[in-house]
Length: 509
Image (tube, rainbow, N blue to C red; front, side):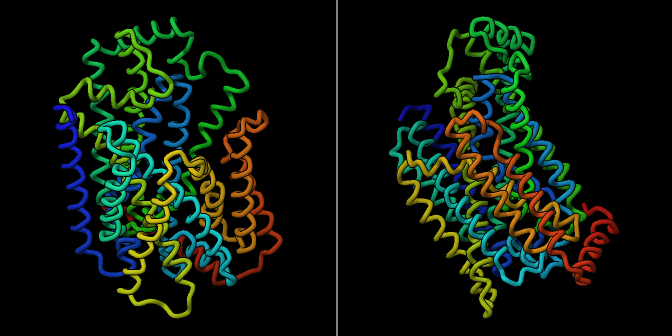
């Protein structure tokens, strides 16, 4: 290991030790099953906001997005715009009402349990089907995070793939296993701040080194003249039919936020509905600046390597953020930037493990008539984390597994299956259990089939699958609910209580 790699490894060890320490702190405060799965509904707005952001943004933010901007330019930025708009609407529309409604609806602490209680599903099919969807998608997603960790250490330090995967897997599972939701949320805050610092520092320092923004733009234009690309064009040089579909698809990513269980869990865990506006300002501020940093880093990469007479290959484009950090900073600081990539991977994985655990313990095992004691529920939650982690690790043993293609469906699948149900359930009192079930299944199936055809390069299915899936779920839920609607005074009273809860009290600070 070279001297630079030794410094970088030292920084990563410091980071990993801090994550373990936070997990141990949270372990001392986690006493019951509800503590483990939802931190006792006592999350402060700043913690909820940064936790939601960090758990949402995996390595895509630090590697995928800068790499896409490096290769193509601002036409790729529509995804970032769509995601930011979607996140803002999610905090504005969904967060306060979901926090209130989950408390009123039999103190629901998970999305599946909320859907079951809200729509009075006596068959429990809503809860079972939604839990299965969560387990399937997130188990594969956790596997993909383990694969990313293995490849990270393989490429950065020439470690064996399995060793890197197991190191990150054991540490992440460890602080999740003992610290539960609070441990995950607090480590997310630290990870979110580390990601933020890295994404702000790299483009600023690089711009200063190159002589300022004007010089950066000049070099990007030189690169475009040589390559025929249009990095500074929002339409890639012209608004053709395929480009328009690409822009609409990019914006459509924002629809996914309404149905992501690991993000919605942060809303449910807030201290009160009145915390949502404060959390929204913190969360969207963090997200907008991180997105801007990632976008600018990709463009600065074009200028930097143009000045050096280098053009990164398509395969190496996603490393532009890492390469710039290693060039610009002392190896220890560059190691902290590498740790930011691990932070993105670990924050996403830990959040998904907690949601999978809740689906197993609260939503499937919780359907039994005999309820577990608070202590038993705590250990069942930990057992759920361990079980999902073991299955995901087995899947991840093959780094080239075709199963990882399913990860591309996860965001669209959750958004199409759950998003319309959350919006309608919180703002339209007439939704029925049958309408919600048919809509959820319809949205998930359309999203999956459409996505399969898109990945198969069928020219008729280039639109991102979340858009047709979301539309089908929305229409089916409304139509079937209108045909199966029966007046229920309890539902109407519950709905009015939620409306009053989200209006009458001032914001908490």
